[in-house]
Length: 57
Image (cartoon, rainbow, N blue to C red):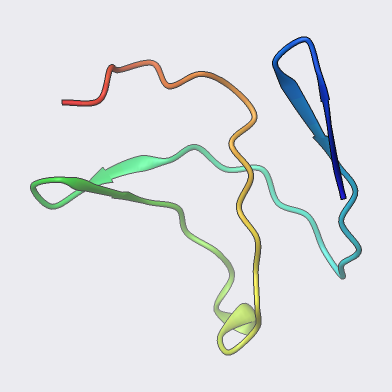
């Protein structure tokens, strides 16, 4: 479920745990976040909560 308010989406997600991380550059064109090793094999969802600080190249 998602609802849009003035260009901002609101999501309701059921889950087990929530982490807040900063996306870091990776290689020559990607980015990544780190998650706990105990999450290996789990399904996850990623939601961007702010505008990127660097424009996409």
